[in-house]
Amino acid sequence: MAALTVTLDEGLRATIESEHYTWYADELVENGGTGTGADPEQQLLGAVGSCMAITVKLYATRKEWPLEKIEIQLHLERFNGAEYPAYKGDSKFVYEVRENITLYGDKLTDDQRTRLLEISTKCPVRRVLTSPTFFVSSHGEPIVGT
Image (cartoon, rainbow, N blue to C red; front, side):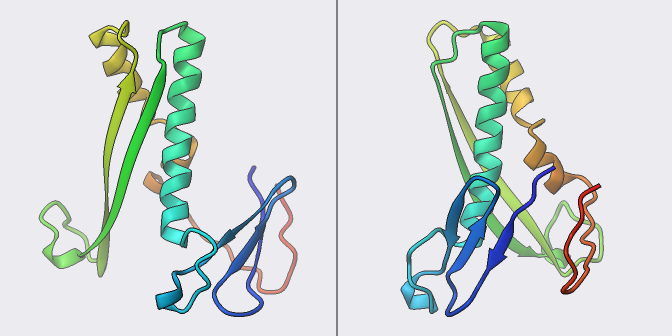
């Protein structure tokens, strides 16, 4: 499973380290950051979008379908839960992710395009966001994988 460490020493720039990579999250200068990295919501959308694109590409490659390129645009917006028409629960906020997926490949059939769009909804990161997810806190204790 995925594991990483996030450290925030000064300001709002976070250093994110995994076993093989280091990258940064930050806020814009006008929001108190240094402007040296995408903000956390952009990184969340980037994780979802890249996972969707990779999942589609791997599927198309395995099927030997002529997918040349995939482009995914994502937009995240927060709404008041009580005012969101499709929501009947009691959460204060609901989030809507709007997506636009463009599949490039002149030789893709309509059935292949339909299947690839369906496959895009099955990526692991998207499943984390759409399935029940629980945060288990250990405050100061190392996290041990299972």
